[in-house]
Image (cartoon, helix red, strand yellow):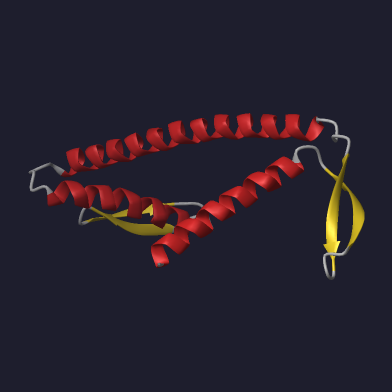
Length: 144
């Protein structure tokens, strides 16, 4: 069991830890030291014990806030996963046959092209084309 010397609030402490946990202990000590440095920077005259207590409480407060945020994110993830499962379990919509005319070469010949598009695709494409035209007009107006 190795002994590790850590420094918190300008004071050195020797602490025993399990083999391989030295890095974790040093990282934890760094967190506590940062909080202690904040307290020391305020100019308040705290005893070493009070400074360590306050630094620990500040870390505990941050930990509680992080846990609450994690729970909120877990709930949101569960909601999104449920929504995704619902969407994936929906049956695939039947394709809709759309007939459109395509002008070929000199606008003399016309051929009919049959395509199978998902339901609502044509409406979505039309809306996108309309939005593109509005953007093009806006850019043209600003440029000219």
